[in-house]
Length: 497
Image (tube, rainbow, N blue to C red; front, side):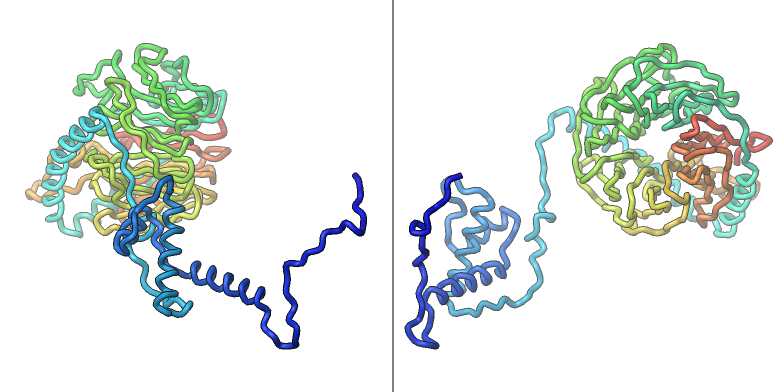
């Protein structure tokens, strides 16, 4: 590099030295006034939402937009105008603190996207379904409210006593860790997915492989759900029709029958691994959670995606419909849970209490309570009527990986009338009385959903338990773990609760 001659060094003459001590420096005064003005500008309270900026500009008689002006430039222009007004009126630079406008923040602004006719039809179908089933549920709960508390307590104590009899019944090995296990509605089968992306069908109680599906997923099959009422004789769903669905690595959802080892159809749209999936209670629609930070709604009859829903800042891990089919809860690695009214698309409740990723979510059959399980080791129960967290239960140390609320064969969700005793009094239902959870502590735990007491800890896995489920008649509990085993748990009499 060439140097520079001393005679050619540029001299900065843009300064002014006062001729006498104490004389004002005009250049310095100008700079200080500019800094003071910028300070006052920064202290001005200016709306952040673009609609509120436009409204404020209109209120002071200024054009709401200029040529090629964007939202940020418009907000800066409003700030300059407000500062000029303050200077003209002689107001001081100190800004008095005041309550912020509730509509000012961007977080209060709702965004909507235009949906197509398929989504409109789906929302109408789900509204008709949910309203009819909510009517049945409310009528059932009115009868249930007449049962004396003493009867409820005795009923729950009998259930707790029987839950303490669960022990390891059988085990089946797998070539890779088992990421998901789910009972069929009839309890005849267990569908399991492995970290190799393979989907298998095992029979109950022997856990003998009945079918190994081909063309499943690239890796990490972590989502399986059975179509409502599939495998039940009275359902009218044949074994050659859609019976279950699975999700995993590669972003695809596969739809399976019980007769063919190849998928009936493939749902494509997610750009990353599909985690948990769940059918709508009507059986017509399917929700899926994915690592692409969205959950989506699918029409399984047309195999079309009808809704792509954002709202989580990180990966979405689990989704669950309430028994009426009106609400959907989504949870993810952002430690936040959201409850959506799927008939309108609105978020009606945000669950903010967990401090680590939420891996599991499930609804009670009462339609308004749901449970979440997190990596912080806690299960939390949320009441949508009270709009608050009602219980926080220490579940699995190291973190909860999965949980299931026992749905039962009775109660309003199954449209079964309430039973009566010999005196004509109502008998409490068994549905929603039990919750099972699995975790990184290598255990499956059984809790009473009445007083949240721990009824039994099932020990047998040698590594973290990744998934668990309880059968429709509560006779069986299944678990799948990182130790590459599927384990079945039951009472000696296999009588359930």
